[in-house]
Image 1 (cartoon, rainbow, N blue to C red):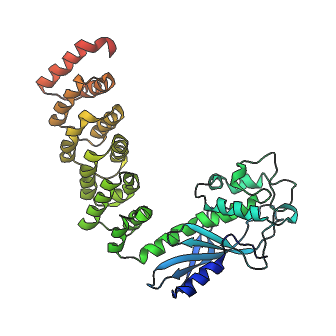
Image 2: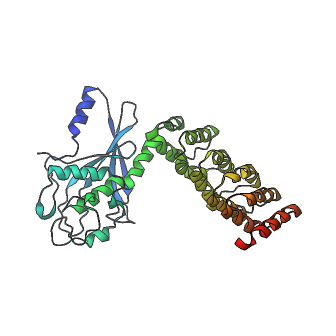
Image 3: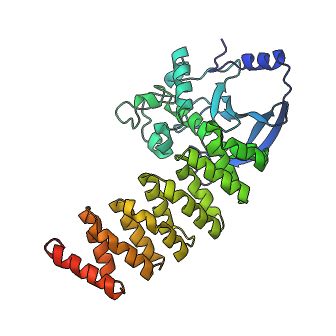
Length: 365
């Protein structure tokens, strides 16, 4: 019986019935596989299947089923399929191949189903386990085995007796190949097409990634990304790499546009980025966001004051604006602002304000 996780036959029949023409394009790659080496790339061939519009539809690669850590494993060549965004879709075995567990025992149907679930999980615990850690757990169970007393993974992360196979295939499915697939697909689409993907939930992160890689910083692109974030604030985190890659004026403009509409969590994210980025912001930017500080949490205020210091953006207008926070009901914020202002050059009026604050709260300062 041919063991496969998803039947390729159905796919071929679908193409025939619907008269969809496809072509295959071979891509010679060198990729890092965590189970083989962290530094030496592995030569491999990725095959792209295009649709009737000559756009990427699916990819596959023939790989060894296991990177054997104990020199006892039987190694077979199997085929992994991905969709056009590099997401694992299926594993197909040749007619004469059946995966094995320890002591030459063949996979059961349940084992194949579990392996499929493991390979579909992008956040598997296998992601963070190093090859040497697995080598250290191989005991006397034989082929592709893992000793019961030293297992470092939850049982859901591997098929019993086949941890090497699960580890090897998972890192093929979710490793360096995925990046190449996404870039190949990205190169097949125009900027206009990528911008249209910003309104499609499943493609938004891909569009941001590819627009960043292609360094698309036109006014239309910037506007489209800002609108996408306004409609879906969760995209802000993913967009930070784009803004940090952009020219300085675009970085500052995006911050001016997004900070006023961001929730507290996203403001913290953005302020943290401004504090640590090599991008430059100027006092005009600070003057524009000064109106927001009355809404800031303690953490936001702390970041904001750190930005003023680190980026040398302190002005008399800003210090006067900050004195209003000495009257806030949040004493932690007021105290943080007091100590900040105390070390600044202040106008006579502002000095009186912080002196009054000290007199009122000196027992708590």
